[in-house]
Image (cartoon, rainbow, N blue to C red; front, side, top):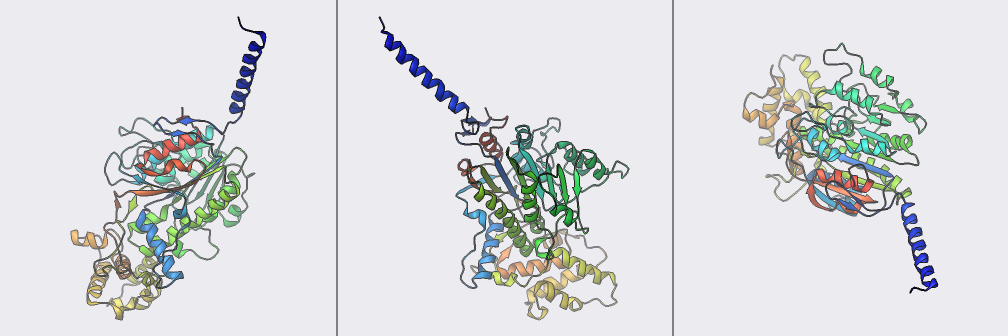
Length: 495
């Protein structure tokens, strides 16, 4: 027969157990979360999540930027100057193939990162039949109370940013993507403009009107953007540059012109709140530079991308226990290699330092010359412009380089600059034969080379710091980034 004080002991244990259970239950940011893909996380849920995607950026793009910076600050020392994110404590690598190919595009790879599914190239958040939609993690986080920000240096309706708010069978349907941006209810969109400001036929309602009717403020002057804060409501902050729908290449950016980092700073101002936020930031012009085989432009935009990461790092340092920062890429572009057959084991990054503009800016100069219809066109007519843009003196060309450049000039001045055969496709792709050949000469002199004007299938890195970062080491498929993040944030995909 039990004694009375024995019952008291049992009761005390029950009370203590009840208190412990209640204490655990009172910690909403702690616990064990298991994603649908068996990603288990036992730590605190971060309030602030930054997802940086360097479009087209793999190890060569990162390393070339670090080597360039090292050569510039310590000439001849062969000491890379690390970017901020390569110092992160956690580093992994991602496989990037999609349902179509080992060489994927941004629509499918961004879908993998955003919603955890493989799909066809060109498809955003839909399956291979283009009938079933996938839900990006941003929707789950918004439902949990996070504010959502999407930032890019290219058009806001391009594939990578679109994967975080849209679902379309064709990435080129930019007008529909724009309408879905307006319907998303997300809090901050910043950077590039809309690709299609009206429908494909040009008779549909202007996208700006649709966005404003959905309750967004469109800020498209520097003054309006700088005035934004967390009382501004839902905002679309569009780069004021009228030249194109994207930010300028960093190498071409004028003093005082807003950079990618400025949109991140302003995004933090708009999104900052006690419930937290998720911000996706794309360095989209890294990809564009590598498509054009412009190593100097790639390096500058990779550094600009890192500058935007530094803004998040400053925020992390102020909130170290509540912040997670991820830096990765969707795929590699251009097949950039640090190495060239005629430079052997040597690199000469100092030879890229005189480059002052992107291929795109030089295109304007060369096309202006072509537009004058010179009676007797000569490459020498552009010698001063080439020296200014590339630091290249035509008198220093080797016979091989001179042959390449003269042939490119002749092709550029011809009536049809489209490649006439496979050889011209390899030499010029679909780019201005003159500017792309000048880029190749400068790249090769520095000891760099490219294999393609398209993407490649090589793995890309992922770097992580902050709450939950330990889950991101190792070598795995890019879809797992989504499931790891779902587990860490205890989204609806986490059990």
